[in-house]
Image 1 (cartoon, rainbow, N blue to C red):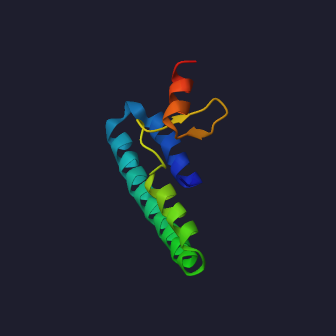
Image 2 (cartoon, rainbow, N blue to C red; image 1 turned 90 degrees about the horizontal axis):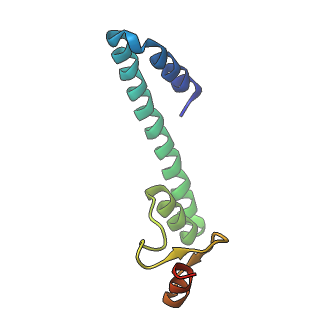
Length: 98
């Protein structure tokens, strides 16, 4: 999100009483957010392409980071108190019942 988009959001918040102005500012915000997202994704894709030539493991990690995929599903792992991920069934049961 750019500073310009944040300024527009502030203007939109102020213009809540005027529906026409609110809608026009909201339309601009949506368009600029879509453009910013497209630009960000293109940058990420270029970074992935560069990493594919060097180390495919790093490229796959970046892909998973962008797509929001994690190492585990909600039923097959749990997070420990220290923030680490528990993958073993016994460790998960110990965490749940402590």
